[in-house]
Image (cartoon, rainbow, N blue to C red):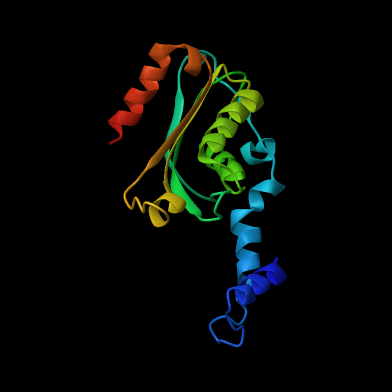
Length: 185
């Protein structure tokens, strides 16, 4: 990766003799490997970690964690995406720790992934791993490719939603989720 960054800088007509660019290829490769593409090295099961048995009587009660900050990279332009994820699920047989929901978001956000697919992967992984009857992932993000390129929509916020099971099918349950999301503002 460092050799590719060096080739990129040279192709851009830059001299690696510039003191500000010395070591840049190595630093960029380390940042991409450790911060932006490390999600490929972890599965959703590993991200969620040890799960625990759901308490009785929680089969229709929502677990909601809002404002999980994340960063990612747009696969089309390799430009940064930053945002917040809101994750919800109806406990099935298993539950996960709240911090593990953030780890699940990062598992997918730290891949080259579209925002829409990020939401879908989080919701479907929760449904599968926790055997949840209903899951949701709602993403609000600032896409650098939209804000800095082309039309330069500096204030644009993009939204993507994904629902599985009862949160897709049960309008009242989905409204309850959105009521909770609205109450936080």
